[in-house]
Length: 106
Ligand SMILES: [Zn+2]
Image (cartoon, rainbow, N blue to C red; front, side):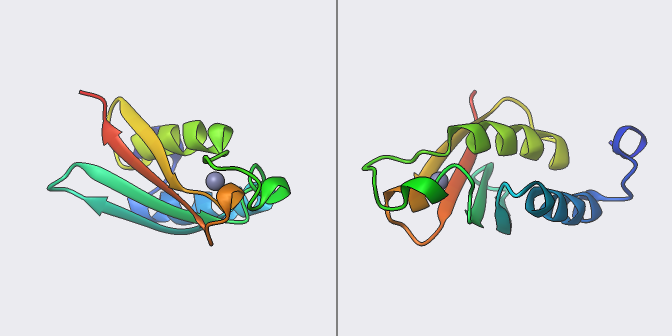
């Protein structure tokens, strides 16, 4: 990872991506929690560009692009493979933030 991405460690990479996500205007990344026992990662974000136009309009989560993108980001940043991402909470259905949980498919 270090050679490919030019970062010294995971923390440095995550901090850089936090800034990058904001710079793109995509989202504000609040936290990344890694549960090693459950092999699960939880990400909290707010101001997602996908959910902003639809606040409280839908019954289901709406951040499909971001789900896929951050799933790939977590696979690289935390060196995990074949994750599946579930959006548990979403600003698009009236929650205060979007919450994504990722688990290995197998
Ligand atoms: Zn969302």
